[in-house]
Length: 248
Image (tube, rainbow, N blue to C red):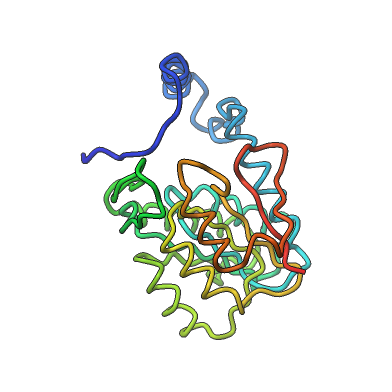
């Protein structure tokens, strides 16, 4: 299998500690019929903090009309969380579609504004992973009411092109929540441009790497399209990097 490349900052001690923790997870003695109900055993502080942040974002848009879009899906955990939050807070809101955009091949191209720490192809996934993710999301849909209506969509490809095509095919689209996890300049800038007239008062636009020296392109894209001086960029105490704006 081709190596999946990511940018990491963990110490060797942290890596060894997490490898040991993974071995505890992989070799857990919990019976199969109870294993999925006890995954909280294996959520470390960092992972749980991220889940709680996604929950915080979703709560902010419950009374805002529109869809949820994630730009940069990767393994798809956020999409699965959003499906669960919809099932908890608004199980009959079949209008709350959840859409994910990704190449599923890592970064398609880089710009000089992205700096020198990352390369094309970083943050890819295993081959045909989107098919597996589709099955996972189908399961989550089956656990909520109105399961016969598909309320999620995965859009594979370069979002600088696929988002424009999607919006032409779905001219009714209003964006209640957009989560940007592309990390890099070109797709972040283009997708911000395309959704700018699709948000409404109360819409939330969230970012994974604003003000992050390893991924400067995300901040530069937001600065150029929306402007840093116009919005209060808010953050949660749960995470060092994740942030968001609320359209007012």
